[in-house]
Amino acid sequence: MGPTYEGTRMIKATQTTRRQPLTRFIVCIMMLILASCATPHREPTKEAPESTPSTVSPVSSMMSLNKLTSRYGYLPHGTNGAGRRVFRRGSSEIEIHPTSRVAYFDQELVVLDQSPQADSHGIWVPRSLESHFHRPQVRPAVTKTKKHTKTRPIPARTLKGKHFVIDAGHGGRDHGASRRGVREKDVTLSISMEVARLLRQQGARVTMTRTNDRKIELNRRAQISNENRPDAFVSIHINSASNSGAAGAEVYPARIRRAGQRRDKIPRSAKLARTILRQIQNVTPAKDRGIKRSPGFRVLKRNNYAAVLVELGFVTNSRERRLLGSPTYQRKLAQALVRGIREYARSI
Image (cartoon, rainbow, N blue to C red; front, side, top):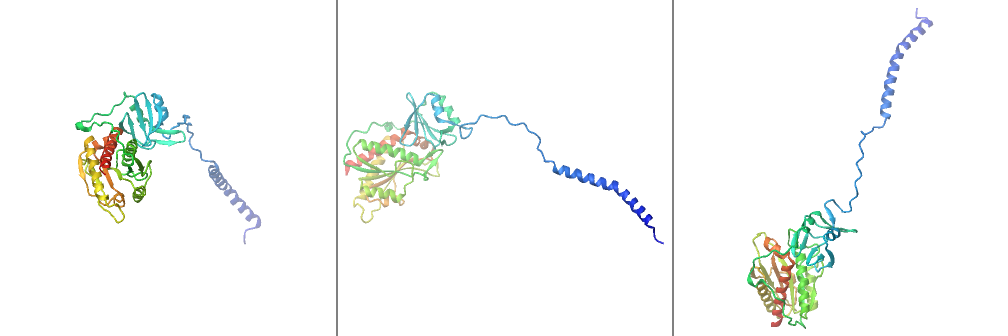
């Protein structure tokens, strides 16, 4: 006989009573888990950093050029032909380019740790530049050179009626040969501007292929010359070599004459090359590397008129690099070029 109804109900009640503690235990565990999940994770409390004054320079290693120069009594005097900002204090002069690492203190070359930066607030330069302001007025280093390196002002002999095209090599994205902050495009522009100024003083007409830092295509340089029909075209460059001992000046005259070009292009180019190289030797310590055969320079080959390409020294040679970066030496080279051009002009 099976269990009675009452017996069955008592058995179920007993089983339910036994399960209640276990059920409550499980419910408690579940509630603890849910509570821990609902509590947001918090990072350990950190002390807020002390507020620091905002800097005005782009980076901590830079400082305002205007504040630096005024601190030591230097006043702005505009911009020179090479695009450098000029500051003067009495007879002392500083030249700093807004984007180049090359600077000059009383014509002594100084290479900055990093390039200056420009923004809407002005020009920022490396803080290390301030160390150069503490020393007394800087004078150019004395270099032992040949006795004939001292130059006299170019005699005021007229070049009236003559016309020359002066070509500053490279420019813009094309830096040319560069070492330790001395860039060919800067040196050639500086020298070319001085050559043009001296030639104009002599009464000559001068056309320049570029007067600022921009890239001019080689064919366009020759085209500018052909459009102006000059007495001569002079392309100014500085050299480089894998051998750091290579040094000196060399000149490449045009050696190819195409149909439609002047019949006297070749002999005139050779004469101009000789007079320029001779004058460079007369007034600078540069080694004479001679008259070279052009490897096919387009500015010479496509030119309808007497044309030469002048390499004034090697930026890869430490001694010549220091000289080429000096405004004093650049002016000396410009005078040599003008003397050579003037000697050539008197013979044609």
